[in-house]
Image 1: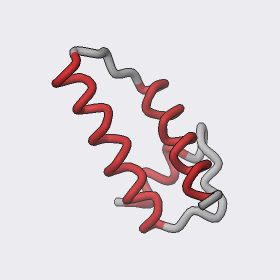
Image 2: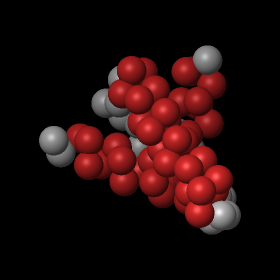
Image 3: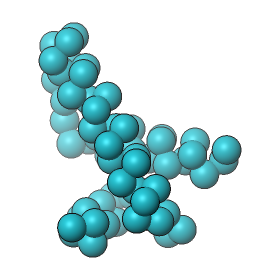
Length: 64
């Protein structure tokens, strides 16, 4: 399953050096945040928002 996500996301996000476990954690966290924003605050969620948030998360995570 993770291979499917990696293939899809690798077109938009640099996943070099990101392990399956790191990607799983990132997808869980970013997905949860976007769902909360939609359900609690009524904010529209787009694929572009998801990709940008994922890029930021992975960037910050790589510098910790």
